[in-house]
Image (cartoon, rainbow, N blue to C red; front, top):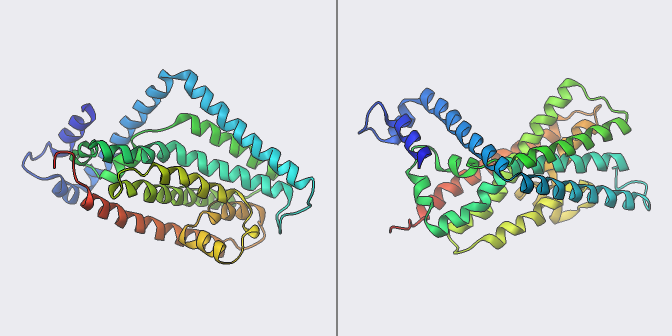
Length: 295
């Protein structure tokens, strides 16, 4: 309620009669500043909440690190029997796993908890309070909480990427690292869009937790080299639900330094734009379908 009062005062202080949509259209500069300020408040509250439960914070970090180490052991076992997986060597696959971990943990840090809570907001009617805020509802629903433990676990993935690059004797240029970071951002956005689609199903279904849990099955597809996939499966999960390219394309940017990264990166950018546009339309449709708790 404190956040709601602060936002309402900030957005409507110039004219109590003026609607929030009119404020959005006539005060773009103030709106941008307010969004950063609002996120700053939510970020600070999330950190306070995380530090209030330090043991839980540490345990989740330990679980994620152990799970990631299990994947590395699996790679060791696989490459004790084979020399390559398609055109991927052992340390290239380790780099891919590290990239997958990096994207996944950053996605979970910023978005996962919020989107996983969306069905409960809809079911209980607490979505009403989100709709009353004079900010974009998708913004507030998507970014309300932040997971600090996931950021720490993302650093573990970054460490394995760095170690794999050292084993491969690859020293990426600043331009490659910039493209890699941009590709990571695209990958995070794609995972956000997929998760939002699953969560937004709650506007039409009583419960959609099963769909949300099914997200992990799709997410884990991305940790495998793209050369293991064939035919219709590869087409679907490279374009319609592009989870395969999320980690593979950023990894290839670092591994194949001599090649032109633009064609593969263009595919990732196009897939990201299509997913973001589609989910934005879906969100607007979902809000029109929403029946508040008071109706």
